[in-house]
Length: 233
Image (cartoon, rainbow, N blue to C red; front, side, top):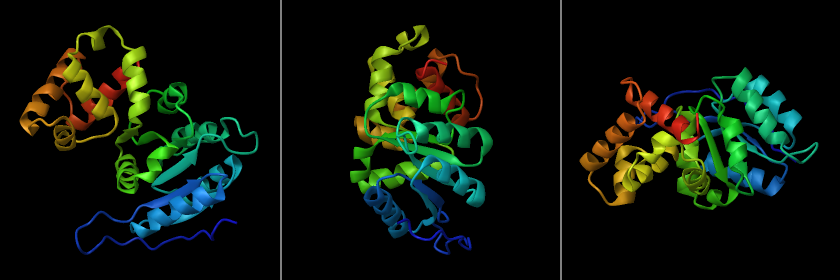
C-alpha cells in the first residue's frame, strides 16, 4: 500500500543547498516504488505522492503539481505503455512538471515519443541505473532543473543507428561529447569522464554547436537543441 501523500511546506535550505524537490513516484512494483521514495527522502527531497497505476499518476500530478514525476513505462491498467502515455500527457498539460521515465528494457522509440520536440526537463533511464544511488539522484536533480538525463545505452543506440547528415560531420570525440551532453552532463563532468581538460571540452562543445548549425543563443538552449539534433529533429 502506498504511503500517505503529503503537502510539504517549502523553505530554502539555510546552508545554500538547492531546495528539496517535490516528487511523485509511480510504479506498480510496490517494493521498487517504496525503495525509490526512500532514496529520495534520505536525500532530503519530499515525496508528495505515490501511484501504482497510470490513472492514479495523472490524478496526483494534477493535485500536487510536483517538481518532477518519476514514472515506470509499463503500468496498469493495460501494463503496456500506460506509464509512458501519461508521462507524455503530463509534459503536454503540466509543462512545469519535469518527467523522468524508468524502463525495464532499452526502447529508443519510447524516449523519442517522450521527448517530442522539447528535450528540456525530461529523462529516460533503464531501471538498473537506480542501483547507482548517487547517479540516480543526480539524474533526478538535473531533470527537475530543466536538463536532461538520457540513459547511455539509449544514447549509444541513437548515435549508432539514427545518425543524420549533420551528425556525420562530427568527429568521434565530438560524438562522445554530444552523447554525454544528451545524458545531461556538465562540461566539467564530461571532462572528467573523457579525461580531458575543461578547456578542451569547451572547444569540442563549441565545435558541436557550429557543425550542427545551432543559433548563438544561451548555452543551455544550445545544449537542448544539440540533444534534439541527436534525436533526429
